[in-house]
Image (cartoon, rainbow, N blue to C red; front, side, top):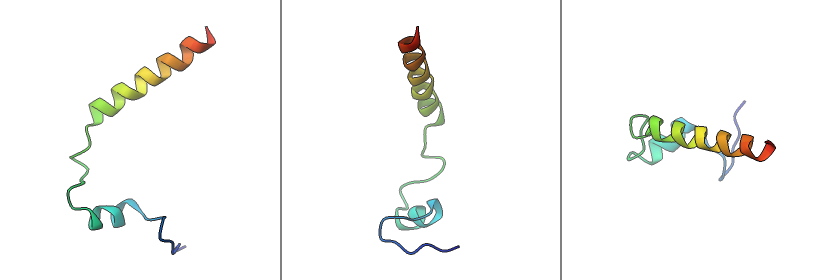
Length: 47
């Protein structure tokens, strides 16, 4: 299924248009840290 939209694009299309962005450029540890902080915050709201 191919969606033609000016707003929607796949990750591969985005990387092709923006060569600065790459899989290695993502800081997985930083993103994971933010995710863990977000879960801690949400769970603290329930306690």
